[in-house]
Structure formats: C-alpha cells, structure tokens
Image (tube, rainbow, N blue to C red; front, side):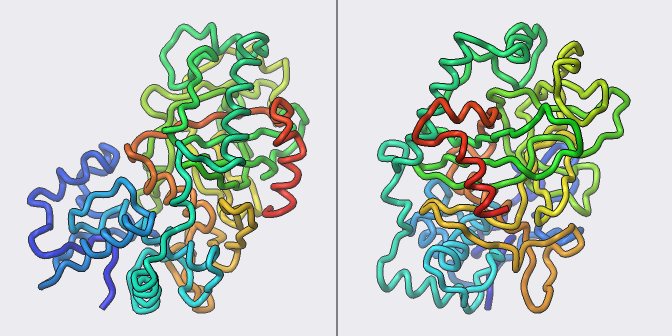
Length: 400
C-alpha cells in the first residue's frame, strides 16, 4: 500500500475541509476543497485509512531525519509533508547517489519505504542537519555577507533606479534600500540579473541562489521578461529586496495552477520597457514605477526557452546542491505542462529543479507563507571577493 497527498490517519480528516484550505489556497480556490497535485487538472481529496498511524509515523521520520523541521505531526499528508517526502527522495537520489528510489514523486511506495527503513535502522540524518542559521556553511556566510555589503553600497550610492524606488510614494512589496533586511533566520532567494541593458531577446542566462537553514542551493533561469502583450512594454522587476509569500501561479487556469512565490500583498515595483527594445536602459527609466501583483517566481519548463512576461523564472533542468555538486534533473524534468504528472518512457515527470526549490522553502520555512526575494546585478557580486562576478559564469556552465 502506498500513501500520498490527501491521505489521513483515522480521525484526522478535517471536519471542515474548505476551512482547512483557507490559509493554503488563494481566495478564488476556496470552492475546491482538495489538494492540487502535479498533473494537469489533478485535484485530490482527503482519504482516511482504516487503521494505523502511517501518516503520523512518516511525519515523525521526516522530522527526525531533517526534512520537516517545522511540520506538525497531525496525521494529514498535506503540502508540507509531501514537500518533505520529495526532499527525502531527492536526497537519496542525488546526495546518496542511489537512483533506485526513482524520481521524487511524493508517494510513499515500496521503493521509498525500503529506503525509509534503511535510514531508520541506521539512524541516518540528512547532512544539512549539521548546519543552521546559527552554524552556517562557509558558502552560506559568504552570500549573506555579500547581501549586507550590497545594502551598504547602495545606501551610500544608489543607482538611478534605486533612487526611484526610495522615492516611490505608493504602497508596494518592494523595500527601500534602508529597509533591506537579511536576517539569517529567514529564507532568502537571490536572483542575479545579467546583461539587462543589451537589446535583443531575453534568455535563461541568470542565476538564483537559495539560502536556507545555513546552506546554499543554486539554480538558473531568467529575471527578465521574454515577451509581453502590454501596450506599455515588458515589465522589468526593479533590483533590491521584495517581500514574497507562497501562493499560486497561473491562478486563472485551474487546470494548470501550481505553487509559486508571489508578491506578499501590494505588488512589487516594475519599470516597463517603453521603447520595446527588450532591454532595460536609461530611456526606460523616464517612465513611472508601478506596483505589479503578477510578478511571480515560477517554473520555466526544462529551460529551453523564456516563458516570462516579467516574472522570475526558474528552470527545471538541474541545480547545484548544498554540497556544491551539480545535480541533473533533465531525465524527469517536464518540458511543458502536458507532461507533468505523467510517465514518459516509464519515468514520472515533475518540475525538476524548480520542485526542489519549492519543496525546500515549504519544508524549511517556519511560516510557509513568508519568503524574501532579492534581485541583484551581476556586478554586485564583486563586493564579496569570495564570490566574485565569475560565479554566474561558473554556475551557468555547470547546470544550464
């Protein structure tokens, strides 16, 4: 027997399923009191098992092994439990190097159960359990130090665009430079934008660094728009720190909606490509900043094209682990929506590296709705010699 999203131990099914999803779903999703799964139009309701505490036992294992530090042992196989189980599966596959577990599908089936028993018997823990915000790895400390130095630099000498951000009189989720806060107890996602002023099509040539629990993961994608249907031109997210929360992307299409970071409340500040040359240049800075609610951090397929209309896009092809090793996800990273949740040549297709990022934030955030996203320029990396501008080239060469 396998257990997965929606499974509940006896007596643990919520009395009011709709109420259970109020803090987890967007307001327009309230009428659907079911879990959103990976495949197209795949929604899953609560299912109670006849006997046993299988879900609670799984949660207890995940917590002890280091994959679900803030999860509740509530006997409900919800989003956080699913994310934590996928992290365990991915850890066995990529860190332990045992491909027998298969792709991280979030299902506790026979193969995953076998590995779970092995870990229990050996009292194994994920090696990131040795790290935390109080005892971080050297690389984590370097990136956090970079963020502090970037803040100090732009406090003294803001760019013209950051001056506009500082002077913006409206309400937004974009912070003025003086309010940037890189508290190590929070999860930080850092985007590094490359070549924004070069005219021409925007491609997946940017990197993303996730700082979580004292360790570092690296991804690739784009921080730039690849297309737009807006008369004012494509929206470029302003650099700096922005308040984001976990929500849902593609909310207008309930067959394809999936979990993503989105602006916390009022929208993040963007500047539009007024002359439509597909670049952010001084000409564009003459336009007004606007708060935009739709600039999400979302999935970008396997990474063969730029889907973005201004969002921050993370590709599924691969990532660099907390051990600074490249991890190839291409075998099970879906190319497009239609492949998600299906089997291609016997392999279960997921969002690949993007799923790893989402699962890390879901499992390791004390508040699953909170996240900080900071967008930097490539040249900002020079402020921390231990990182340097060449870090972008090295990351892209490794995983893109």
